[in-house]
Length: 432
Image 1 (cartoon, rainbow, N blue to C red):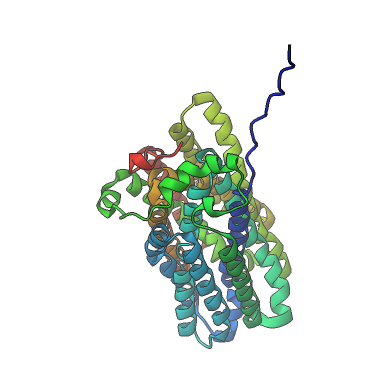
Image 2: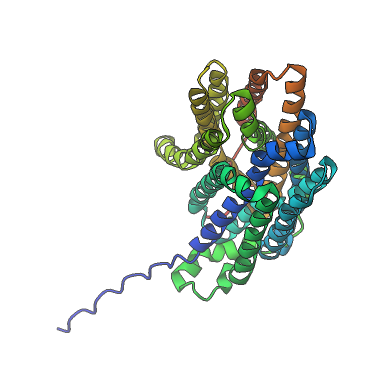
């Protein structure tokens, strides 16, 4: 009797696909460094260019308007042309206008550079979402979103500490020139490595190719975007409105926060840099915490939709509650800790929101997430503008601005109640 041949173990899939997450993380960090740089530098810019409170709010809002207005075109181009070429254009464009901020000699020039910076950056996260939809199986996408947004928040979190040391050394103008160069390096590296069809990457073994084959075949096809279906979809509208509410409250952290710490709480420059870390640092922690908590909830109820709603209810309620709590705390450190917890709660909503955009969008994930991000950034663009006028009308009563944000946060719960976060617009685009 001949001996039995040893059993052949199934081939284990390589992990080449995770390099997409590495590139996304790096870009998310660069993105938020460039965004937060303006809010930290604004007191110095305002002093040099003699800007009023209302002008400062208007300038910071112009980034949001440029970003919002070009989100849908940026997401659509990702669906049509693929993320590779579109992200190359996006990153080089915004890096150019980040550096161009250093040339501003008056408020008008800052308005133009901020608007063009925002327009250039538009489509960044929808195209990263599109890349995730192509390169990652569904079960890995929400974790990837959590990692990405943690990195984005932490990139922004440490920017104040970085800039309060760089600006006194080289000035705010040279600081923007330095940050503008970083994005160009990322764009070149990404363009040479990334492929819109993951199956074209020779480093994938057969097991990983099998894992990604269905996504590659269905989601890389450049088909006509069903605009009428998107516009008529209650899912898309609810997704957009809840993100409007989420972004309105959150934009305070990357616009007026440094001014609030220094002028509203009368904290010194270096100390303000350390305190300014808290909200975005805590927000970053909210993303992996959201994934971990959602995983436990899902194991108990077995419903992705219910799990995402629970996380949204928790997040919006906590963000509103701790923001209001901060207004009752006289100690600056205690108040900033409360605001940090509010930011943490804000980001409990983020992974589920972007995963919902991927699930609802399917092969149109770039367009749907771009539409959602456009509405969110309209809310974000309104934040610095509204706060500027509220401060003027209320004789710099910062508490009023927090109460308005808390009310808008609570409205987000209503929109999540009516949102179906899992059913795709096109059932054929649903992936296993």
